[in-house]
Length: 268
Image (cartoon, rainbow, N blue to C red; front, side):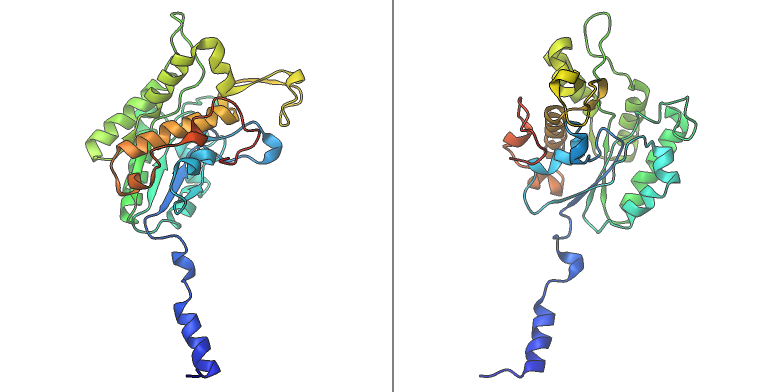
């Protein structure tokens, strides 16, 4: 039977996937955070954020929308309208990972500083309620560890006050928590003071790192291998929470368990 052209066009339009549902509802992970989670262009390689690598540990149908940005605290993320933009993207069932603390602790920069027990706590509470109101699931992520060792040779918690506030809020508001500070500090500890340099930005000029031709010694930001491994910690933490999105976290994550760089930030 021949279908009239106008009817055929109408049927095609009705059967075409709606733009807003290109990704199945509840299959998006949004990230609010700072430079440790943000994505970087190729000219900054090997600097890599854990949010940039997270998709390598997830089912292919999961979309990661990374709103993390360098130098941002809960205060500046709100003030610059970044939080509102993230909220506008949430659809019911989505998951929002919230990791701040590094820049909130920067007392010398008032545009960033958010004292742990007051402003930081209040801002996190707002994030939690906003995400829930939008139909999403907030997940608090304690500040990732720096490569920082004490006199005893053990990795230190440089943002202990901020992590403590997050843990308390998680308990009092029944909000899922990935204790990335504890997980990453144990990871740095296992590597030790010397070997852990490979996870962070430690390059000499003769290493010819594309983004750092003069070399760099940075104990906060991650190399490709470091970001992969931190993303693996986040993915494992998310899997353990038994949220709906947890089923989308791969049990086997070889792209995130690498100990040698791939030379790029793709999964393989």
